[in-house]
Length: 307
Image (cartoon, rainbow, N blue to C red; front, side):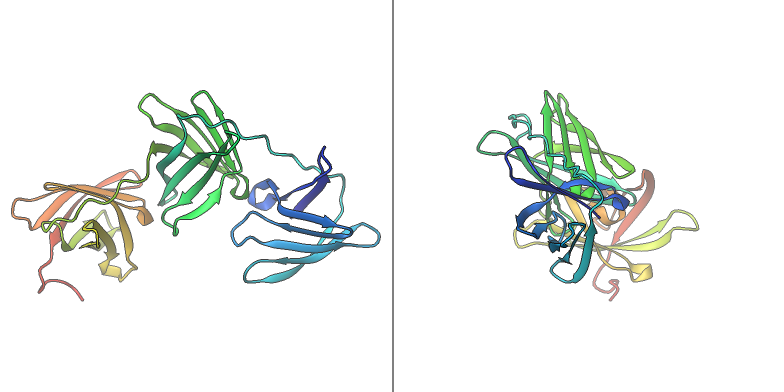
């Protein structure tokens, strides 16, 4: 951990910390206070870890305790040179084109992550924002810097070593790229929150089983259960029946007449299919990591359902 402490042009203390092994550099410190030979600051990271320390008599060390909600550990920082604090550039004024809530799905390896981008205007008119990880309890992360120029959006989450660059196109979509450490992936944002799940109809309610056969390495039985929430919308859970795996939430469930579509973010998968006239099965394509696999889900009656 590298910590830089300095005074700005107005004489106020400012600071930043870096963890080079994780690609996190120049992260602004929160709640920094310096009184005589004592220092306190909070790192803008999950759990809000804090440091309380005291400068040694010779001024060469800052020793104290680094703690979060669960642990405390001694930490000694050794002075190695002049401070290298880089003050953040001011956020750009927020335009109407970008103001509001946006939703997008990030393909992170073999997992899909649903993300909300919320951009709001501060009293002085500049942009402020947070990212919301929908699939991790709607966990919010404040955006460090936001830069807007014409139709181009750039923002950073320095604590997570994240940079996003996108362009608002003519159809109202922000088309861009998410970069984190050495990895990058396409990420597009559509205006508004994620669409709610469709109302669940009797035709699709219940438990459905499908035998997936994608070669020797991938033969399994999937169990899909569709139930009705208190507001009547569809709720879905998917389970690997053949391996007694854990249940995964099914999201963005769209039902219209005999058509069904949904996402399984935990598997980076989607399904799109049609119900047959008898209402006994629906068939379509299961798409996972850009590979389409034909799949048929068959409705299970009370006698056929597995415990």
